[in-house]
Each structure stands twice: as structure tokens, then as C-alpha cells.
Length: 460
Image: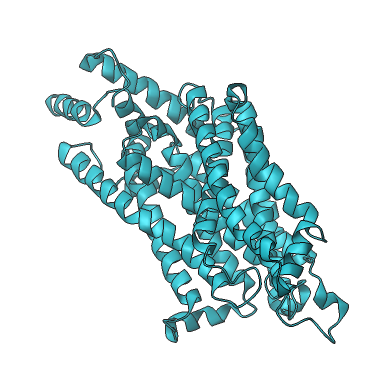
């Protein structure tokens, strides 16, 4: 459905396209001092994390808080979190593209780069979690088809490939614009644009092939996106432990991923809107739509939380009872109820009020949604490992509790900084708003404009 009620002449359409190009390319012209400071800060965090990882490689996992019982900690919590935020970018983008929800078009690239950055670091954090990273080769040299870990690697690798393609193909016209307009950039950057543009000139055949390829990718990536989080949940559900022995884990993980990812997209929208002055393109209406989506997803996630926790609580038998007691009223109760109330229930209630669906309020509400989404993954991992079916006996006190060491904290901080650095650098080299999709949303057909411009150039 086209939003433009007035049919513009070709000349007016060209003027509108030039206006949008200027607005979108402006942030790429020069990096401000604060922008450079932000990038430097992220790089420093990553370097400190790199030093911490060298210490882990040198001395082994003994430098972490991981022990024989708490064999997974904040590394795996971080892995599940990154998989979660990577789900929503590509999945929502694909679904809304296929169903022609045109209001979402200015948001697609923000969602897609979050997805790519998340899945890249999801794969890296798994390698970091391994005491012997060289052993990852065994997954390929000696694969076991019955192993959920093998399938996790296969799905993540496939999902990363399709996510990159879904980000890259719609970007081709934007890269071509950068190639043609950003002629004052360093030689290596101009070469990069020329190489990545793949000779794009905007011919009707190129538009047809690109749009058809995007449609195919959108269809393919939907089952892939769902499967990546489902397979991740199987890593837990196929393990016979109280709290993980659940047939509800697949949809439970997918619902939680939708909620966390939507919160990330909202935060990204607000940051880019303010930093790059994109108020004309990331409007109040977009925040209102995303706020309503967040409310819906919060209720869906609440349903699966009731299934996951309160049904076992009604029975209160054996090790499950001890685990739930710890979560509801024991040592993990503060984190558990904070995650449920501040990360799910309260945001849903607040966003029911129209005044809270403005850009700043909805962003402030999305921040605890994302923060407590990470906490929720920590609660899925750590308390359950500390509640095995057989009681922990004759073990050091440190094995009965888990708290991450500074090594783990630094490495996890570096991984979070890595995600932000990928998003930041991408937005500094490429348009963060899809120019052609935004124009098509206004009723301007770009293939016709490009054909007109190519004809003029040939005559000239």
C-alpha cells in the first residue's frame, strides 16, 4: 500500500530522491569527535577483553568461576542472549517484507545489522567458552549427527550466511550511491564501495533480480531464524536436569528472543534518530508501532513463562521444587522477580498508555526489557546447574555457588562492545536507512527513475 496520496512528476520524484540521499549520506561525510571517542572506548574494552582471554588460554578455565557443577556461566548466558537478539532482526524484517507492512521499511537495516552483529558474536562466544578452542575442529572432522551442538553450529553458520545476504542485497543501491557520491573519501574506502557495489547501475534487470532474491531470502530465513533458537533450546532440553527437562523450551526461547530483539531494535532506532538527526524517517509513528509489538510479545512471553514455571510449581516435586524455591523465594529470587516484573510485566502495562508510546518513553522502557532479557538467560543457565538431581556432596564450597571472575566479566563486556562496534562501524560506512525502500514506501518507483537517469547520461 502506498503512502503517497499525491502523484509526483518524475522531476519531483528526482528532487525527493536527492533530498533523501543528502539526509542519509550526511552522517557518512565526517565522524564527529564524540563518534571517534565512542569507537575508541569500544576498542579499548575489546582489547582488555582480549588480554583476559589470553590469560584464559594461558592458564585454562581455572581462571574463571566455572567448576565441575557450574560448567556453564555468563559465557553461555551471553551466547543465548546474542542468539535471541539476532532472531528478531532478520525474522521480523522478513515477515513484514513478505506481508507488505510498508511502515517497517525505514527500520529494516537497523534490525538486520543487529541480527548480523548478534549472530557473529554468538559464534565467537562459544569458541571462548571452550577450554581448548582448537577442539572446535572436531565438530567438522568427527561430527555426531545425534549431537545438538553439531546442529547448533550448522544452523548458526547457515543463519549467519543468510542474514549477511539479507543485509547486503538490499544495500547494493546504497553502496552504489556511496561509490558515486562519496568521492572525497580515502582511496581504500572508494575501492571498497566499488568492489561491494558489484557494478550496480540501477537497470530494470538489476532491480528485478535483486527484489526476487530478497523475496527468496525472506522465505528461507523464517524457518532458519526459528530453528536457530529452537536448536539452542535443545542444548538445554536434551539434558536431564531439573528446569531444563522441558518440552516447552523451544517456543519459550523463541518468544523470549522476539521480546529481547524488539527491545534492541527500539533502542537502536532512538540512538540513530538522535545521533544522525533522522527524525523525518524514524518518526513517532514507527515508535508507536514497535511499542504495540512489544506489548503483544510481552503477553506471548508471559504465557510461556506461566507454562515453564508455574505448572511445575503447582506440582512442587523433588529437585524441581528445590530449584523453584530458590528462584521464587531463595537466593535467586531478586533477579527472577526483577526480570519478570521490570523486564516483562511492567513494560507491557506502561506501553498500553498512548503517552508512553512516544520515542523517549518507549526507549526508556525498552532498556530494562533488554537488560533483564540478559538476566533471564543467566537464570536459565546458572541456578539449574547448581541444582542437579543428585545433591552436591563432598565438594568445596566454591563449587556449590557460582560468581563470574573478572576474566569472564571482561570477556563478556568485550563481546557486548564487539556487537556495538560492528553496528557503529557499519553505520559509519553505509546508509543506516534504506533509501530505495523508503522512497518506494512514498510511492516513488526507483527502477523507473534509474532508467530515466541512465537514458539522460547516455545522451549526455
